[in-house]
Amino acid sequence: MSETRAPFRILYLLTEPFITGGVQSDIKSLGPYFVQKGHEVIVACPEGDQVPVLSKAGVRHEPLDVHFRSPREFRDQTAKLRQLIHKVKPTVIAPQSIRSSWLAHAAANDLPIRRITTIHNIHTPMNGLWAGFLLNRCSDLVIFESDHEYRRLTRLGLSSHKATVIPSGIDTDTFFPDAPSASLRAAIPGLSTAGVVFGCVARLSREKAHGDLLQAFRRVSDVHPDAYLILVGDGPLKGDILRQVDSLGLSSRVHFAGQQSNIRDYVNLFDVFVLASRFRESLPRAAREAMACGKPIIATRMGALREVVEEGENGFLVPIGKPHHFARAMEEMIRNPELRLKMGARSYALIQERFRLLMWLEGNEIVYQEAASRVGIA
Image 1 (tube, helix red, strand yellow):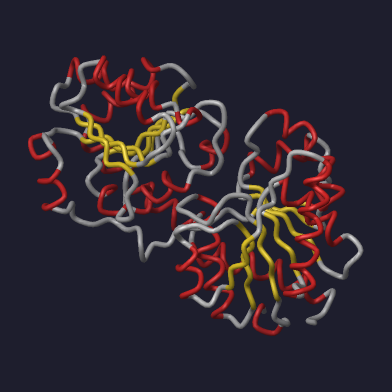
Image 2 (image 1 turned 90 degrees about the vertical axis):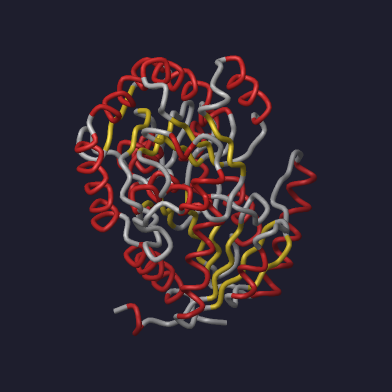
């Protein structure tokens, strides 16, 4: 069906630089796919080290910062975006945040361009209070990646007629079950003699609650001294977390891998993927990448994590901010290797059922083609 529709020219608006991150990963999948299907893709955002990935795939990058802190800055940024719109002549503008959606509305409300916003996560409760009203006014359609955020925003005033859910997909050519890398395993101190290996891939920031995870792991390691924890990622709380590891006496059982590009190699070292998020959580890509590698999941009962973890089927959901509950789930995984295998198999199956990459790519393409068909190609 989608092949019979006209191509579109889409302008993505990102708030953050084009570096390694969840939103950027989505664009790195969507952009090249659309280019291959004959569409034009422009990504407007601050520079970042992943911009060459876009260029190599035929996606055009335009430097633009959508941040503003005053009415004057808002007017200045609106004017810059307006100039960019006249330059690239998109048929669809796709803001990737509430802020950029507001800016797009100000810059293009009087132009024959469809505005389709994608909401990945509402970062603060305050933003959530006015997001429904703002998106109703600023967007022709809002794409949500999770039912959780869809329900949240429609309860807060967003019209359900302006909203749809398309869960983001996982590239199973990149993430798949594989034998652990012997060289990587040998390079991590103490891992070669470890028992069950728990692993987390997440930014070292407040909302990911690594402190709770370390408190849980301390309880586990007291009973199972050969258990091991690998933390992949970097962030503003790295120093605090390192100090906590030392104070808990876990330095020989916890490995900080830092920011990595070979995520699959690390995930395939894990026996169990763990995520102790507090405060907020979207539809976590890292957890689903671990599922694509056939790993069971332990996570907090937070946000859209309920859409990723089927309690007792592919993992465990535990109360938020309760390290002793998290520790019990970890101990259950240690005691029951058959359960780990069964849950890992269910994780892999769930990716095929709900989060296939092609299903997501085609779903977005249909939405954008339908939008472009209403305005025509310039």
